[in-house]
Image (cartoon, rainbow, N blue to C red):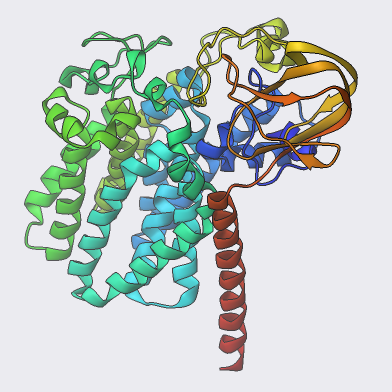
Length: 506
């Protein structure tokens, strides 16, 4: 991301150093990596950029949860909910086992989206619609898979708010916010959707990534086992899928509270929403839900059913806020015991397995090894790549005929130089073909030939000397996406400005 931005490529779609370049950010939500590139500008080494991003994801998710629950209940309730949210074992899995950067950042937006939704339910104005729109767009641009998991639960939350307010008219501002958020995210969402046909999506859902291999056994939700390994086939894994002991205690207290105060309709409705949503999130992790996964093909791209733990933890955190709000004053000590137990039990999970020497990170920061494809997945291989065995070369070469490269430079989304074609030649460029790449030879557009077996750009040139220019152009769908995003952003800013001016006038 940093390399691409420094090369003037924006919005970033192409990752130049992965093998011969791949359209990574055309399909992989880019927001956390834009933030990382900004942090990088302050002079931090890349490993510290990653650490800072993980720290910020935890801190900001605690802040957004606190704001949400503080609005609903009290500071005391918000503090407990935030603690449950941040100190859940699954959060440690994301941070210290999986290193799941994008999923860690998705936690920031869950509470913000619920908070903005309840603000709209209580009073509709454009400022609140804007907050929901920006929050949803943030999630869309942070993690595709988590967005796919979260949206049905957001729908349930909206349904709960409609019944709570007894006002079906709030469907319209929810719908409007969704449209604006889609517009804001269009520069990424439209190409990701309509150009998906150009990548080998099979690598995202087969083999290790087949969801059938990663269902959670019921006992694993309660087990305190901890490991730094992988999710494996069957009920025995090398990492933890527990909800958390204090989190389970919170749910039990909520059940008792619901039974004791069942005549409180508002409390009953809220606990019912949380209970139903939590059950669904747990059920979708168990193999008994396989028929749902089979019936909805898009769910295969979630890959790991246990990813729904993110939703489960979010719901438990809200539940923690609910029960704290209803604690009588005489139970203050019990409240502090729960927080202390949460910290003491789970803090041991929030640490690395070991510390590595700098040489360990070299393979992740070494361009030559990235070019060679060392330890890289094939998630976004263009369909033209028929042989994934990398034979790397750094400048144009002749497949047929003979050429002399006088000078040549390749950056992220452009390149060029002088080539002397000594005989009619079929030339291969060290760039993976993907729609949008264009070549000019002496200012004349060149028709591209069939990509090579490694999926690289090829073209024919007759005898002569040429000034070659390479450019990664926007396709029609990318141009439409960029235009929609810019238009929605300007419209949003204009309406917010008008709203602020109008409020001052009043």
